[in-house]
Image (tube, rainbow, N blue to C red; front, side):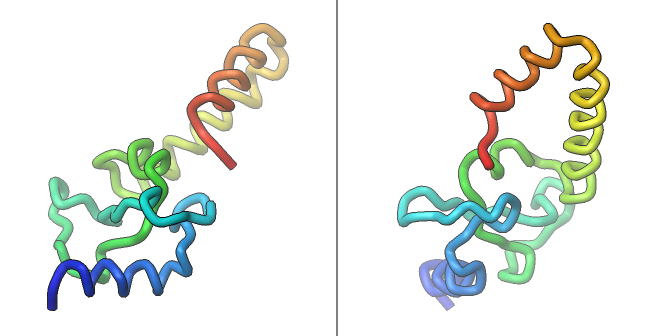
Length: 102
C-alpha cells in the first residue's frame, strides 16, 4: 500500500481534525505524527500515526503522549500558581496566546 493511500486513511479516520487539540484542518495544514515516536521505538504502521496540526506536532516533539500530557499539566499547574502573581500570570498568558491555540 502506498504512503499516499495510508495518509488518506489517516485523514479519513481523523475526520480531518487534529488528534491532540481537535482543531479543524485544511489541506496543507495537517501533519502526520507518530503517537510513539520512531526515535523511542515506535513503528511506521498506520496504528501508530495520527493527523495533527503543525503546532501540536511541534509541541509534542519526540515525547510520548503520556510525557507530553504530564508536561502540559505541569505547565498548567505553574500557570494556576502564577495567578497569584499578576505580572507572571500576564507573561504566561501572552506567551500561551502566541505559542498555542485552542
